[in-house]
Image (cartoon, rainbow, N blue to C red; front, side, top):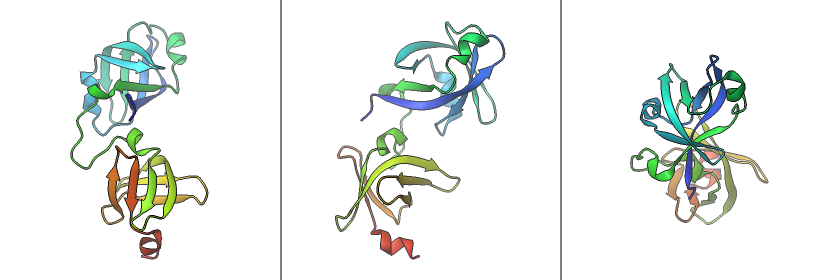
Length: 164
C-alpha cells in the first residue's frame, strides 16, 4: 500500500498571491478545510488557507506567495500521509490502492492489472490497459471481491456480463 494518498491535482493558479486551484480527487471537498499540511513532490508544505468553490478548492500554501511561484506547481499532485487520510466506509477503497491490483475471474483466469480508475456519475470503472484492454464496471454483481492486502480483484467471468 502507498504511504501517501493523492487527494487532489493542482490545475492552475488563482489570483496573484500564490494561491493554487485544486481539482479534488476525493468525495468530500470539506476535508480540505481540515488540512494543516500536505505533500507536494514528496515535500511537506503547510496549508495556511482554504476556500471551497462548487467543485474546486483554492489552497494557500506557506512559501508560495506569487503567481510566478504558484505556476511552478501546476499539474502536481496534493497528497496526505495515509494516517491523515479520511476514514473510508466498509467496502470503499482509495483509488491508489486499486491501481496495480491483479484482476482474476472466479475461475482463476487472469485479465491483467488495473492501470486506472475512471469515475463516472453512476459507478467507477476499472481500466486494464495491457494486452486486450478491458473496462470493468465496479458494480456489486460484477466485482466479487477486493483484497487490497493481496492486491487482487476477483470478478465474474467477463463472458457472463459482457453479453448482458
